[in-house]
Length: 261
View 1: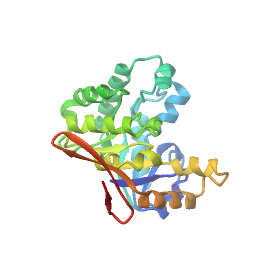
View 2 (view 1 turned 135 degrees about the vertical axis):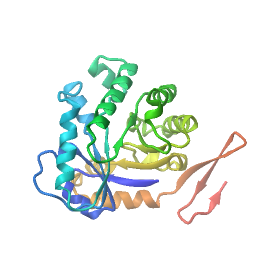
View 3 (view 1 turned 45 degrees about the vertical axis):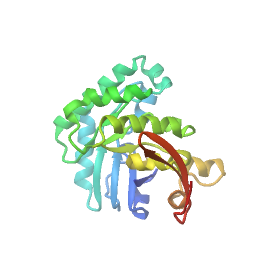
């Protein structure tokens, strides 16, 4: 699993091999910024939490992507995340729609963004809440998800305290389409410590470092806090699961890689 550090300030991306930056931080930026590999988030969570939906058409986001790509003189934008609709209960209450409608709208906005042909990979997002929701959404996308497609898995960040729930969603998605390369949005320490989560994900991002710094009364905008947190995650022991003949066995891997079964 490759980890992309979520950042408040685009200028901080120069300190990371892989960064995750929201379009909201870049939309009005006139100058380029130093970056290596990065993913641009659509800002879907903030937009829907604020407006209960998308006040602007997909074409506006497409124009944002084109403008940012045009200004980019350093690094590589590996993907721009499509504008999805999250499916946590409070988001459903915010929009007044159903999970099925959120899934349909997510696919519709993905289709519209693909049609804009913006010149960078558009990451589709799977949405749902129950395990079966995600499987149903994979099927709804159908042939849109090419073999080996890089696909985000949404509405899991609020379940970081229950990594088994996240594992169940990822495993069901993997079983439905084992070829897909999955990206986990907004994962925190507990979920990232699960070896199964890391094995099922191709990539992940997180800004948990900022919340951790705020809780400890330190600067939640300091890139050094992000760097220290990211390094700790890379060294943290993993809780792994082995699958043998349909059965699951748990074991731990220490920092030095020894097994304690």
